[in-house]
Image (cartoon, rainbow, N blue to C red; front, side, top):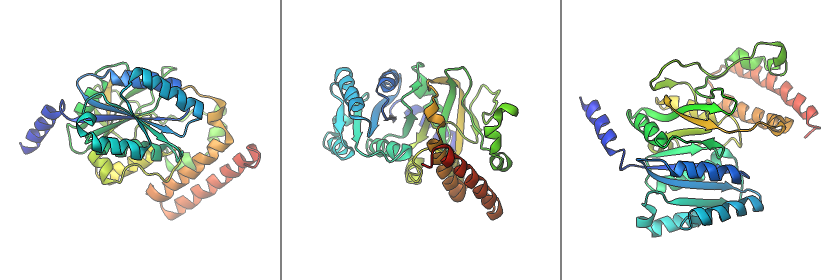
Length: 325
């Protein structure tokens, strides 16, 4: 009975609770305009939009400034410290729903560190949840955040909620599973994929109601602020890649759940390029993956040793392929 009453109070308070959307921008001035304006049209939520520019090219940042000056002339812009000072000095204005912030970060320390800048501001604003969204997300459903919030806060053990996500090609990108030890050990399959049946890490879910899952894509997800505060925000020890398995491990270590909500949908308008498959990016992935395995996986010492040897070979191959960089 007590649990049901708590859930009922949570439902009744959703309209008064504040949600922040954090959008990390890095030379994505065209995408971010579409993404931010779509999110701003969300209904029945008290919303703040926080754009964090992660040391983009000067011309890219200038384009974002120009667009923002026309779209939201009253947007608050500056460094993280300057924006936070404004919030503290203008509490009533900061509490207004629809307020937009642009934090101009002069150093790119990676995906998690950049998002944490926005999350810390969201925490200072008193929000109960944070939507992490890539600039290339397309969210046309105006009840998207309301529905995700409703399910996220239905249970105090729900720490993350994510929708169905569809790529431009029409394939699903949520929910996800981790690679098994043997899949990861035999990495050459990745290079010989044309000769083998493709391994899918997308789970096939035939449910039409929210369900706990092992992992979701980091391109768009709603997180509870009390959970983020509890874990000290996102792990900044990786620059790029492996953020999802790290978050998943931290959720499960805290005895929480990642909720997949198939009744709402967003589109990931990501366009693949050769740059995304370069040797340098693979080397960055290997570095991040080894950190995840060492810090968060439950593998034994011998399993970690085998994976380390496997990744050492992969690292050497990509260094040669990348001209020794």
